[in-house]
Length: 249
Image (cartoon, rainbow, N blue to C red):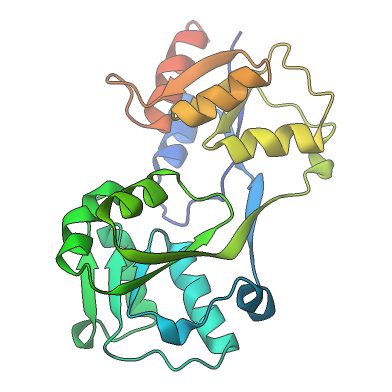
């Protein structure tokens, strides 16, 4: 069956040259964007109930832009003056760059990992005497606690924000040829909003092994999978599938 409409379960890209827009123009398909999940901050009172006092930490581990935003939000709510000597360990360059929204980069002690959480190990090990805070979501990647425990450093995890299912009730009577998912939370949102969802002719696209597992556990048929050696991105996987499905269009 040909593909004419795609729903991407993420916010619309803010850049004009997004591969999704190129895909839309090249194949004359309609691509819509909608967040199936969203993030809500945990207030300072709830964080205090987690026995968190920001004054007790000398280093912060930041794993996402959300963790940056919510650390500084909570610091503001707690009237905590962030000291200049605080060390920041950022999981990627993108997160470190985003940190400039809140601090003067050249005046701070910022340490950057290449990509994965485990890549931070040599940097954290070098400063093993610090007291580390990991401000995270309620759905923390399990690699983080394992890595930090293996390093035997003094660290504390705190939930600064939560991943929440978005209300999709307005999509109840809307049909798409392809639904694209990027996390198990997206799959959970689909079935929370539509418990009786039946796939029928809808093609399901998933990114990553954990998303794939969540989809299969819900009995979904996976038609498009990324990343693969041939299609390392979701847009490449979609393009490959559309090219085949829409032959002779």
